[in-house]
Length: 435
Length: 100
Image 1: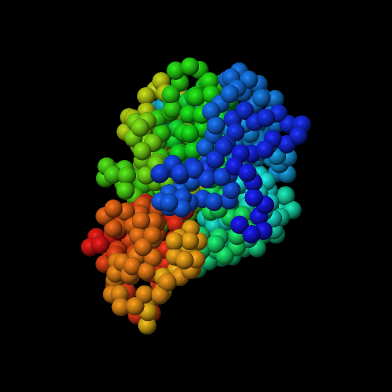
Image 2: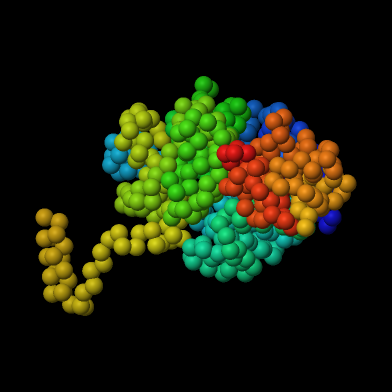
């Protein structure tokens, strides 16, 4: 690859740093297991299967790993031993270690016992995408890239723009032209060059895949850096386990777009179990995936009892989940099946209701993707699939201020004259309306 | 007018380093791919599975549209059309549409 420093297969440990005890040692094809060096590549040249980071057998004990984690920063880099980087970077825009809040009022409303919300709106650009970009950027810098890019449904654009700005790198982001205005404005504000492509996300993605061949000196975080990028989602699981006192939840409800987050969260729990970081005998949680009915290729395949996800043309208010052709769909289905979970789809009205339900019971205002997740939790509860003794973790991946139109018209605003009598009169009407 | 097949970087070494191929006299996407395999035999195993269908993570487009939204390999190819082969990134699984 011209213009890019090539690295040897095994990452080096910089002088003065302790060797990484869980090193990534290769990229491996998820289909045919062919191995490649830890370079900027994302697809198997033999079978076109996706590549992912693989790790050498662990040498440190669970206790040693736990000490290293606890001595780390309160960011996702406390888990650097489990990420495909040579060394823990000095992140210019600290990310992760978001709150895990117990949502008793939400649980009570749904007749559930114990529900926790992982609040990803607390990240620097208010979505979980800060995690995947952090890891992709760190690896991109190790590989010598100097320009960041991506195809995005919005949240990723925000994160790429912000992290590139913090690192002093130029960024070019490609989005569907009909994206929510807030996400476009919150990208351009960082100085990123915004390319609004006439077409849906799948078209944008295709364009960027083609461009990645034309611009080999650019780090397209979710194309040629995808194996590193995807690993960032594992930190959602690591944090959850640590915040629960080194325990694994019984069940997880998480959104499914490409299926990457969903599968990597489970991988994160698996790695902590294998590393001896959580109680012996812990198992991977029951994994429930959440899709919008207007773009539900994975839920449709699940319903049909197949792992063949037929591509769809998205039509949903949950634009951040509007991937009609999900790369990790079959893996998401296999995971749901293996853990006795499932993949559900909810309508746009259910999504709006989910946004309000979460906001009213937890104080967390989520974007439509979180509405999809909350509505799916409600659906599972209504079907009686969740036992009262279960500890459930719900991943709320983005902020409601980015999709503000979702709640427009769902409540009334009382406009009054600036005097006490007007207020009392309005109060009388409000009380009367609620009697 | 011949049909142009655009190849991704990952396949170019199996096509003599070419970024595209020119195909004459093919009426469907399936025939285009068949003729492509005649020109560069290694491409057959790289693109197609044992049943001759595009592999699970290979996307084939005709004039910008995924052939799974058309008639799959049976999709008619107009004169001078452009067929693009790309690896799936956030897009992958899927059977060719019915009739393919």
